[in-house]
Length: 408
Ligand code: IMP
Image 1 (cartoon, rainbow, N blue to C red):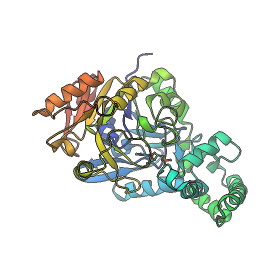
Image 2: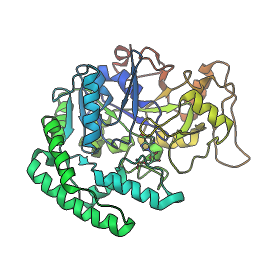
Image 3: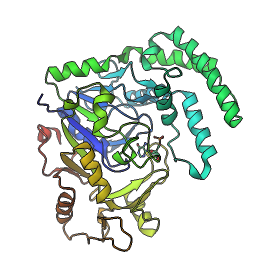
Image 4: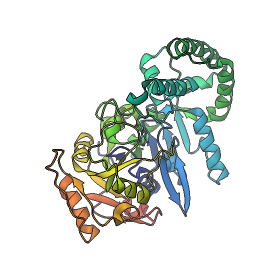
């Protein structure tokens, strides 16, 4: 099965600039699909100077003629989604069944998941994961647990889901009280909110897997939009300091309900330095004036939580691992000149041994820097982002079909 599909993933710890790359590719695709994560993601796109921070709705929504899919692998927070849909409508974007489909098999991120996330992090103290507080881990935990999970499709039967919500809230309250002495959540109130979610979202809920498989048979082009970054993958990242879903290209078939061959060209997004939010290992971290400078120039503050990101040098080992894991075909290099690319000296980590770290001077021409990255990572850099605007994208060594038409 030859495919013209594209999968866009982050190769670091998230915040690589995937949103912009997806926005550049979306006009040449019929479908844009989120297959992992939830409202923990924050994909930023700038259109004509206007900034859009998308958490749950695929970035393709900013392009006419694109069908956007929130697939089964997503932890779907209905309150955040409705807020996002309404904000888009206020800014003149049409959002409805004609351009958004939410999988009935996606799991609902519920208020008790956020409560569990918060209580668990507080209890862990210094050993905390540093989550975004969006209830992601507890939601996927319930998915695996099954009996206490609710799927999006259940919103189609408002009466039945209200009963389940009251029952599950009672179970959760008992656990929260016993474990943390926490005040109970109001199950009736949550059930009422769910009534509003049903009214707002029902027309957009459906079977996304069969839609995508049909699209593949018809030769329609699909873009799979990854969330987070490969080093945060639940199986392959820096466990336990990771998120709770499969965010690499390996997660696409399961998370979207498509055959593995549908993944298509894998485009890995990197920025020319590293950043990480939350706790966990970060070998190239610059917890000093250099890190502060990178943060300042790269505006490295969380899109979802506003937290200052930890910053450091580019880690070629970590990225090479992510390249191998997802079978990355091409790289999209972002933030080359609009952010810390203007630092006079640049370092690249090529090994982890203490006192034996090789460093690179930034070549006078950024071109040499790109050449070096291609050499180190053994993949062509397909795209280079040199600014926030849509036009500030350079096509470099790309082989993605149709991309020249898409980049304006
Ligand atoms: P969670 O996904 O909220 O459970 O957070 C787990 C870890 O993943 C934390 O270190 C978060 O900061 C990180 N994380 C989750 N989503 C993102 C993202 O979209 N960008 C960057 N870091 C993320």
